[in-house]
Image (spheres, rainbow, N blue to C red):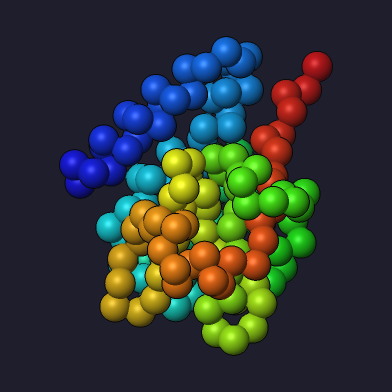
Length: 155
């Protein structure tokens, strides 16, 4: 639990860079929600902290809570949402990151949280956790990323 709080504090401090406060808060919301799920058990088809998450269920839950956005439930469908992030070095916190983990593209998804790390629900028997992008396993399987935008306030 301590690593979750430490990472969350570091992330929030990093967001103190000049930007409109409302936009900054909106962009940070999915990352905060993702970090709050750390430790939740993996469950195939799961989409809540009470019952557990699979990878796409975690992503759908996070964006529903953060922005009230209903994302598709499958990884493949989520891979078409938002805008393409052209290069890995251009990732921003809150971007969806996709991997080929089952010998097929876009078979796994996580949420980039910054600093070369992402949150995901790995597999049965594991829990939602933070992963390092620089691990050879993840670097070799990276398929791409998508960026979603928070809903713009009306008026």
